[in-house]
Amino acid sequence: MENEDFVDIVNYFIELNMNYQLNNFIMPIATGLTLSFLISGLMITMRNSKKKTEANLLYREIVLIDKSISYEKLVKCAYLGGEEFELLILNNPCYVKIIKDREEEHIVLSAEKESNFKRLKKFFFGSSLSKKK
Image (cartoon, rainbow, N blue to C red):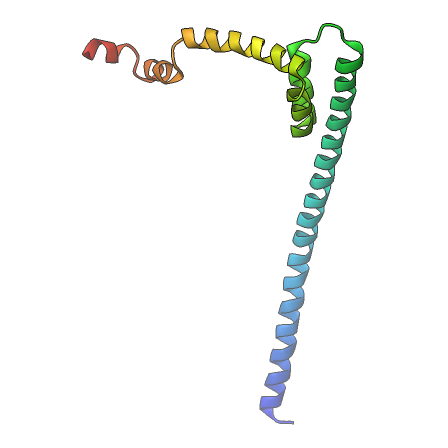
């Protein structure tokens, strides 16, 4: 056996050892990331399912039990149930009237107040802007 063959064999085993060490370093990280994504995805799915169930119960309560329907219950149902329940609520003219009445009050009240931009300018620059004008 020549010296070159020995060097090639040693280099092969050194490279094999480095690959083994690299795999031992990367494998737990990859496994941990994969498990964390799977677990978080499962948790999100379970939470969304629970909220859908809660929205379904609330919607049934609104439709079947409540004689006086409140805006807050409609908003909570749309929030918990997502787009599906939002569309169910918006397809009912009675519910739309309740929402419009409440939100028109809010629009009128907010129109009377200062705009957000004016309040931000006043906050950051104080009354120095009004003195320069």
